[in-house]
Amino acid sequence: TRDFLIAPSILSADFARLGAEVDDVLASGADIVHFDVMDNHYVPNLTIGPMVCEALRKHGVSAPIDAHLMVKPVDRLIGDFIDAGASYITFHPEASDHIDRSLQLIRDAGCQAGLVFNPATPLSFLDYVMDKVDMILLMSVNPGFGGQSFLPGTLDKLREARRRIDASGRSIRLEIDGGVKVDNIAEIARAGADTFVAGSAVFKARNEADPHRYDSVIRDF
Ligand code: DX5
Ligand code: ZN
Image (cartoon, rainbow, N blue to C red):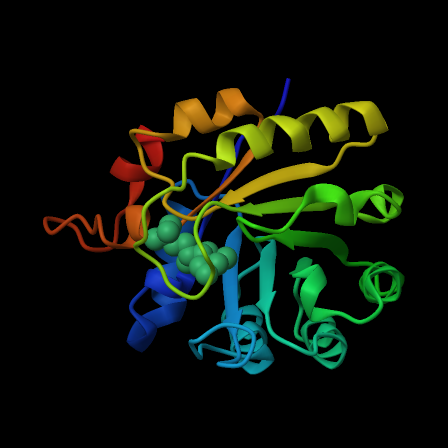
């Protein structure tokens, strides 16, 4: 059986109180902190860097932090996020000149390594590195923003990724990212995902009665 994990994306959190927001979603049942890094070069948006990851660790966040690097070039930032306490580091193969080497950089530091596939990026980038990935992240939106709609074509790609993972015999985490909601998560799970990023579905569902709790939406997942 697969362990389904919920990874709220902090892109949709209130950045003026990020530590408390992360505490709240974790206290509400979330499993992993999805940390979206954007450099306004690889994607047309700019977010946060390693020092914020470090600040969350200093704040006391012990849950896994899943650093999704939407940056180019990627290698230098891999080192910075290793030092900042990231647990998973995933990057887009188009953003590295040496994919195998970038994956090895992450794993040599004891972090979990993953590749991220944009909607148009073929899974063939996995052909020679299946033994070097701990996670495969499929984008079900084009990267850069939260609150977009799930691209239905991703379901077939998920099934193909699941087939590749099962054929590899390795326990590789299959994460889906973009437009995941309470009303589509079951179908996405059936297609083979075991880890679900959710940004706006979690943070925009703030419980007005008790703004510190997200358990209603996380429990509904
Ligand atoms: C987009 C990010 C996603 C995004 C998901 O580039 O990688 O993680 O924050 O947000 P929702 O769940 O709102 O689509
Ligand atoms: Zn992401």
